[in-house]
Length: 522
Image 1 (tube, rainbow, N blue to C red):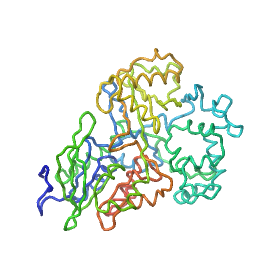
Image 2 (cartoon, helix red, strand yellow):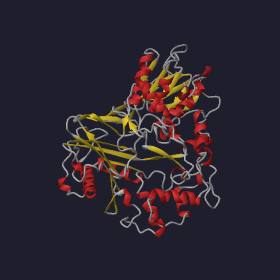
Image 3 (cartoon, rainbow, N blue to C red):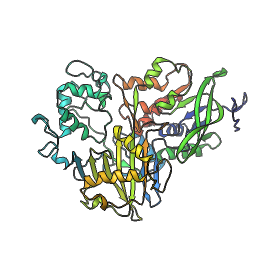
Image 4 (spheres, one colour):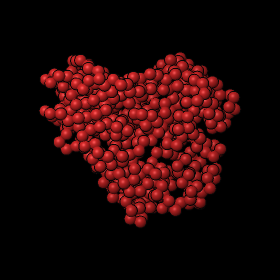
């Protein structure tokens, strides 16, 4: 296969043509190629950066090589993420309990709000540092449940339909309203609103986001019967979640080395229809240095019969393609907005956070670090702490600190950690753990990642008010009638929005156009 730099042709007529061209080597793109691996097709996967995985991004520390850290996805829910679990089995991955579950396990968690230490059992009680009315003085989860039942007609029996027919007490559909609009209709105090938001680990879905993610709760007594598996409720992969896309890519390439190709550092710029039912794809070469990817002036082109775009919102919006200006298409793409998020991992000679109590492995605060988690103790003896996991308004705080000060980590790429990051993280954690700032030892290494840059622009996405998830999800699978241009719309998810399972479900939707049934029935 020949490459012609700065040429409009990648092949001469009658020469090389791909049957399927997949754009994006994240979880959605690699899974799509993997599922097509036995079809005997000429398939190319093209990736903007030099890295397979997208938002499944796993790295390891030299001082703790047996404790891989995940900057993106880090856990699975076996009862919900059926495709991920099944695919993991086929890839030969093992699953282990994710000890902290979804966070805030009562026996292991320390809370710190408004300079007050709390345990979860104390929330709503006399030590709760919020000026709540008597009827608001309860556990925040129970309070949110009450608000849903009292101010909407949502039951949760048939959520796929009911989410878009449920209304607030004034008859306005929930899906048309932001959380901010709905919560103010309840008449609860501003202190109670802050109490609810502060007590959530993530701030996604509050404020201007569509209310469906946060406000409606299934009425008590109407909960679905869970699908039971032999696995714990929350699991992870010992080799890191990046093992999924890496495994998909490896098996895809090995299955047919002459017809399956991977092209890193390739940015799709334009799709043009040509005679004979083909598409001409114009790419720019990119270069990646220290984790930063930038385009070059070098171009190349590829002919293909089918295009599958496994990309997030912003890169999709930048591709010139047939019918790109279709207002329905543009509206569908714009139905979500990016949520910035960040994670910081630090390595220490010993787990200093156990000084207060060996039982405290998780903290949650209204400080910008938001939540911390004991990640593990390596066989080398070094201890790893997830120092901060934050989203929304707190991620820019850490992004700024990563750009200033002196680099103290062993890596000096897009995961670098500066002394300013460490200083602020230690100061906040010293307050939470109730120890002197000077008694927190210096880390021996660290890595962090802020999801705020192209091509992702966020760790996940959230729906705007007025968006009908399932209609948009169905439309984006094949948005241009008569064209073989498809979108693996994991970014525009419904039930599993923000999880890898949604990308696999989206890929399955696309693959029905290639004669493949859902992975769950194969």
